[in-house]
Length: 213
Image: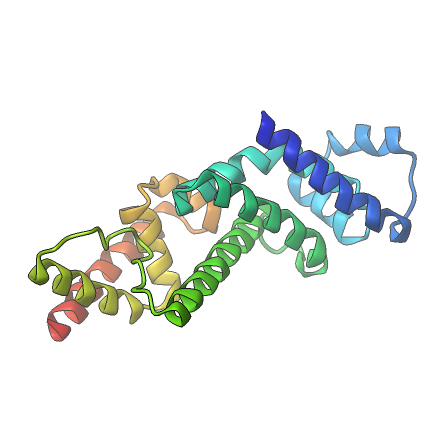
């Protein structure tokens, strides 16, 4: 509940700053209409600078998005921060929503980009500080066994050679514990397509791993 109130304040603040450039409509009418619209219709409203419609999308998805970010980061504070960034990006890049995909697919694509941007920034800082990088999938657990460390390092190198889309599916399904149905909802891919891609990616990962080992 505290998180929800926090996001409401931040999004409301952003909307208030941009509202002067939006197409004005009576607030009560806009709120009533918003509840009757689909996600895609609401986002098209936002795309056409009727930013009040984002409040309804926020109400529908902020907790779901927050849980998704927490599952990726394993950190509620970072999950909260990244969730806020997703809503800011959706408003900032609202013109990129064309309705060809579902709103959820578009939103989670932005969410994953926000997450990967955060990872890249973190890794760049760690490199600059001379600190060993943590494995993105949470696999590089503390282990003093040199052979185990070598195996983890090889696996990490193999993961880095996978295409981003395939690595993303592998991370969500195998390392983040997400069900295929959840992944389907967030990527727009069918469950059968996801299963096929994950199977092929696991096979490719094994091939790369043994080439490097």
